Image (cartoon, rainbow, N blue to C red):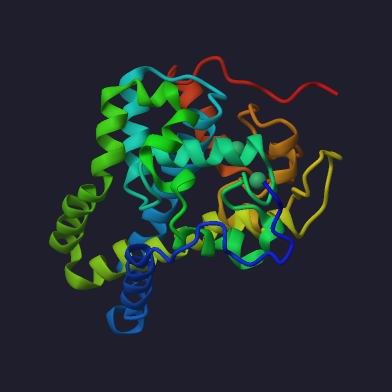
Length: 277
Ligand SMILES: [Zn+2]
Ligand SMILES: [Zn+2]
């Protein structure tokens, strides 16, 4: 296939109006935040940003399911994956397959679903707005996550993850009314989306490089703070299967702290560590 030198997002062809409307509506609802502010609602949003972001996405979807950089007992794995599914970043098979394609074809303009070579905004969020069967058609993307696709629970979660928002929303409403719903659902979702998306965009453009790997991945301290360690992305691309993203003491990696916590509880085993250099 010929590369697209103009970097225009023609790869997917048509706009996916379902996705455009979905992301727009959630962003608009998040803008209601000033009228619903309370400190407890803000605290709830921050807590859920950490729980769904660090534990669900970074530890669960990314380091555990995508890269298998450590192992936990199956019921714990299911629980963590379910927390990830609450983060509104798609089901586990979709997320894992897309990320494995990203590692397999990093920055390839056609094969990396969120190639940074197509520009900041494409890699950040625009890729989500275009119908691309390779990225969004289950029959197509499941090839990249056959291990998860063999598992009935992951197939169910992949299809029905959106329904999990219902008990979460009701729970938040019962706890603190609409203020908790706006902050815990919509403000949290928008902040968590953009934090995660920075790893596909900013950390392939800005920051320093420890490893001279073939892609343009970089270590970016402020992205690492917002993503609980994932911003040490050059380390990660150089050694994708290593469970620890921050390698120096000052490369803060909160998700690694959680993995160590699971290890201390006797739950995390076979943790892949950085090579001793
Ligand atoms: Zn990357
Ligand atoms: Zn990865």
